[in-house]
Image (cartoon, rainbow, N blue to C red; front, side, top):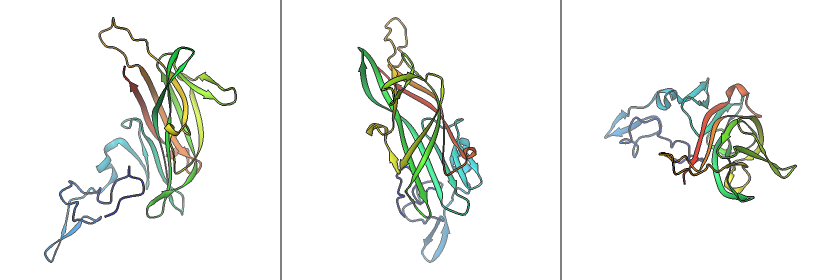
Length: 224
């Protein structure tokens, strides 16, 4: 058995139906009882394992917003070449106070990898199409050229991000913008979350066709 390069991927015996066999079975579900060869029950298709939450394009795979939340991913085999994989996960980062108003900054954790046998570090241009809304004054994106925030609440934007292996939102490399704070109303029975970020996203890269994009819903909340 082996652990993959990316710890969020499945370990070698992920096809097994049940973990009872995992300490002694190989990747094909084969193990020995004395001198006899035995076969453990295994999943025979990705859709059987994942359910309907993953779309299949031949040997390629992508998340589907019908079932996937807060993680968009696409895996694609370059014709005649290696597999490439890109992923985006939305994250809240830290509290900001601007002109006596509270905001919560946000961004994306990005991943880019290539595989011959195991997934390895890889550089690519990740393309993310995002349509999202936020709490308070809405979802605002930081514009570096004017050094200020611009409201993009409900607006579809296209982001191109150069990524080598991993780029984390918390390290500011993946920081995108912020959302405002909801008013705290003690009159209502249910207090709304302090911060919210919701919408949908699509991901692919400059090495794969847009038709192989992965999609996912976005739903981030931070309570009082």
